[in-house]
Amino acid sequence: MSEMNMYVTKETFDKMREDLQRMKSVDRPAASKAIAEAREKGDLKENAEYDAAKEAQGMLEAKIKQLEGAIANAKIVDTSTIDTSKVTILTKVTITNVATKKTVTYQIVGEKEADLKAGKISASSPIGKGLLGKAKGDIAEVQAPTGIIKFKVEDITI
Image (tube, rainbow, N blue to C red; front, side):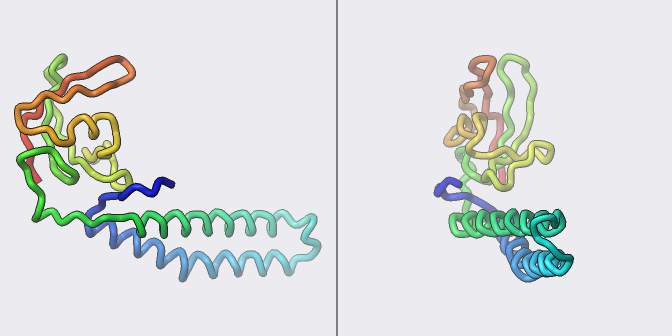
């Protein structure tokens, strides 16, 4: 995982901490119990249930480690201090594709919060990178697999 700062809202940060707490206090003991139960069933060389329980425990530990790293690198962004004169993390930006004239609104978020269906794109995505720092009326040129796409920044809000 990259050691880069990950920008999140307070709500997302709290949810990450809740998930980590649940993994440590509920999921980890459950995984240990599953291993103990499987161990009681006899020969470990031929015990698929034991192997599956050990693998599940390993995956859980990897998730815990990843989430701990994400929390350590998280930077909480306060929405009340956001400057809407230019596109920054957590701003909502309305853009128009210059070629197709299609207008969409996206919120620029950290990777952990990105959800295209909810209109949230990552600041590290090609469109997100292209829009960061742009002001209302600016044209952002975004490199896409099909070539360069131009977007006009129509509005910036919170």
